[in-house]
Each structure stands twice: as structure tokens, then as C-alpha cells.
Amino acid sequence: MKPVLISGMQPTGHLHLGNYLGALKNFVNLQNSGRYECFFFVADYHSLTEHFEPEERRNYILDLVATYLAAGLDPKKSTLFLQSTTHNTELGWIFNTMTPFGELRRMTQFKDKSESDPHNINVGLFDYPVLMAADILLYNPSYVPVGEDQLQHLELTRTLARKFNTKFGKTFNEPQPLLTEVPRLMSLDDAARKMSKSRPAGCLFIDDTPDMIREKMKRAVTDSGKEVRYDPKTKQAVSNLILIYATLSGQSIKKIEKNYEGKGYGEFKRDLGELIVKFFAPFQKKKKTLLKKQVLVKRVLTRGAQKANKIGLQKLSEIKKKMGLVI
Ligand code: AMP
Ligand code: TRP
Image (spheres, helix red, strand yellow):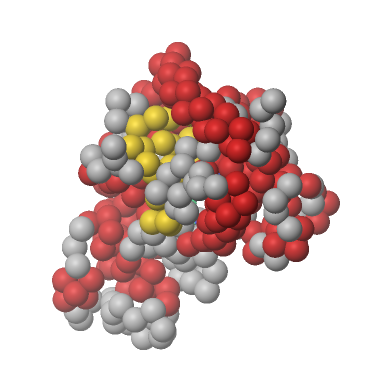
């Protein structure tokens, strides 16, 4: 049997280039490698921790599934499903009883989100990493592809797996994270901060129109000097842009530096803009078509949930037996 791999994303609006280069692009490559049994889901329950209107949430869910499909996730190769149609929350409750309060209080994402929205520090936001551990461990994967900001949550997941195994007997693998070569893409307007939806001004969204992409690239901050050279210590902004160029074009950093020898930031950024426009054009076209096929999208999710639930319910029953819940 192939090793299992699982990951998810929240349906909280359009994805930015950080989500794509740090996670989604890798989901597709890992799926296409044929080496894993892949599960990818939409973390809609996690998204309840932030404010939304129901109609907007529904659209964002459909949008994320269309994004998954248009980017290359294939329901024939991967199991795609909606978190709220599975039994993940049941395992979440069990893990709640095994997670010390203090461990959750020190989670960076909880601290950041509490600071950025002090009027909505809900218990779900606090408990978010426990549900994430359940999302993962219910399917007993060996690997979880994510961006760097999720590593702390994955560490908790591994701790919970170990704790459960010690107390109730070997039940879970301790899954390993899989990072890409861009685990932390930086903002276009401030290279000291990561690209994040909570600061849209620094984001390039993969659904942006060609003109928006060109404009954002033109305005992207650079460093002092004018050489296009990769050096994350002294040229943080330009290095971030070179990394984008390299991953989207498949060219090596050395080759890019050589091509732009004697040319300035302006020309480099203009070319990068064109490269991004070209790269995402087929994706955007495909996604537009998929968004008109809601029936197909829903069918993919229904089938995916059936498969996920078969596996999840079996695991849940094993877990409950081991805990003395089956009489
Ligand atoms: P989120 O938008 O928080 O649901 O993130 C979806 C995925 O994108 C997660 O695996 C994140 O770790 C990853 N991600 C988010 N922001 C970045 C970034 N700036 N660079 C690389 N990966 C990111
Ligand atoms: N917390 C992840 C994020 O913000 C989304 C997520 C929820 C997830 N459950 C997961 C990712 C399980 C990987 C595995 O991006």
C-alpha cells in the first residue's frame, strides 16, 4: 500500500501566490508523482472561526474546490472532500481531552489572529490546532504538505499521536511535514512579513487579472542597489521575487541572475509580471469553466466524502474501542 498523504486549506477567499507556491503547487506534484494515496479537503469548519456571511462562505467553498481542480488536483487520483461532511470533529473532541490548555495558548497563529481581531477571540480559534490534528490523524497519513506557518500545528499533531499511542497502544503514525522550496513567501509590499490574506495589500492573488498582476509587480518593493542578485540577507525583497521567478519558470537562480546581469529591477519585474500572467492564464480559464459546473463540483465532493468516511469511520471505531468507549 502507498503511504497516505493529506492536506487542506480554509475557504476564506482567493488564494495568494504564497498559498500556491507553499502548498497547492506541491499538492498537485505529489499527487502526480503517483507515490502517495492522496487526500485533500476544504477546511470549512476551521473557517467558522473567522467572520463570514453564509452566502459568501458557500461561494468560497465552491471557489476553493474549483481552484483545486483547475490547478490540477484530479478526483480520479486524489480523494477530495469537505471537512464538515466527515467525522473529523468527533476525533477532535477526543483530542481536546488530551491537549493541555497551555500548549494551545502558545500557538503563534492563535496569538496573531487574536491580536488582529480582538473582538472575535472565540474558543474555536483557540481549539483550531486540535481539530487540525484530528483532520490529519483520522486518515493516519505519513505526510502532510503545508507551508512553514503550519509546522507548529503539525508538531502538536505528532505529540498527540505519540501520546495516544503510549496510552492506548500503537494507533497512529507520526506524520512528517512536506515543505516546498518556497515554504514562506514574503509580502510584495514588505519583504520582512510573510504574504498573508490578512494583509491583502502585499498579496498577489492567483485570480488577479493580467493588469492587476502587472501593476502589483511594478509596485512590488525592491532593495537598495540595482543588481538582480539572490541574497536573502541583504536583498530580501529582490530574493523573494527571484524565488517566484525560479519556481514558476523552472529556471535556476544562477541562470536568472545571469540573464539580468547589467539590467535593472524595472526590467526584471516587468518580465516577472508577464511570466506570472502567462503561468496562471490556463488555470484561470479552466477555473472559470468549472465555476459554471456546480453539479460536477458537488459530485466530486460527495464521492470524496464517501471514501473518506469509509476510512475515517473504521479508524474512529478502532480508536473508541481502544479507549473503552465500545461496550
Ligand atoms: P491558509 O491560507 O492559512 O489556509 O494556508 C493554506 C496553505 O498555504 C497552508 O499550507 C499554509 O502554510 C500555506 N501558506 C500560507 N501563506 C504562505 C506563505 N506566505 N508562503 C508559503 N506558504 C504559505
Ligand atoms: N490550518 C491549515 C491552514 O490554515 C488548514 C488545515 C486545516 C489543514 N486542517 C488541516 C492543513 C490538516 C493540513 C492538514 O492552512
